[in-house]
Length: 111
Length: 116
Image (cartoon, rainbow over all chains, first blue to last red; front, side, top):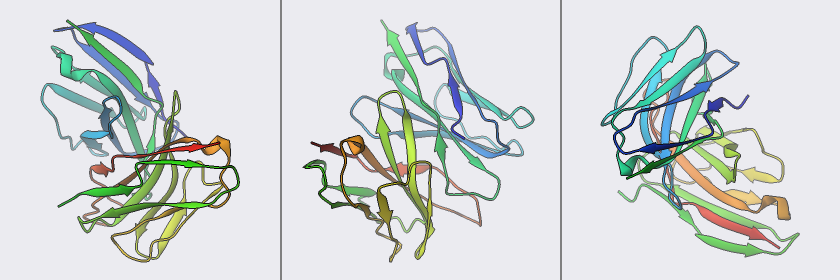
C-alpha cells in the first residue's frame, strides 16, 4: 500500500537537475510532495490532484500520470538548500485524510 | 497561530509503561493524523481522524489508541510500551474544503520516544 519512491538517494552538484519518482499500485486521487531537513518536520511542497490541477513551489515542479498512478518531482538548477529527504504522499479516491507516504528519497546537493 | 503543537518533545519510557503523546492544532483543521518515522521506513501512518468523533486505523495501528473529542486535540496513547515503539512521532493536520478533499498537511515538530 505504501508508494514506492526511486531513487533512494541522489547526490548532485549545485546547478544540476534531478527527478524523483513515486509510484503506486492503487488508483489515486492525489499525490503530495514534502521535503524534510534533518531533525526537522516535513514541509509541504505541492499537491497534484486527479484531473490535472497542480501547484508549484520555487524551481520545483511535478507531474501526475493518473493512468500509470505515477508522479515525478522535478528539481531544476539545484541549490544547496534543496538538500533533504523528499517524500511523496498518496491518497486514494474517497479516502481523503488518509495520506500514505513513501519511504523517502535522500537528496544531497554539494557545492 | 501556533500551528500544530506536540508535547513532549522527548520521552524515555520503560517497557510496559503507558503514556499519551499530545497533539493540538489551532487552525480549525478537520483532518489530523499520527505518523511514526523510523530510519529507511519513511513516515508510516498510525491512526487518522477526519473530524471530531471519527477515527480510523492507518498502516501500523497495533499498540496505539486515539480519540478525537474536539476538533483541536488528537492524543495518541501507547498502551504498554515496547522497544519496537522507539521512534520519532509526528502529528499532522490539514484542511478539507469539501468531502474527501485534502490540502497541505502541517506537521508538528515531533516527539522523540525511546523505550528501554
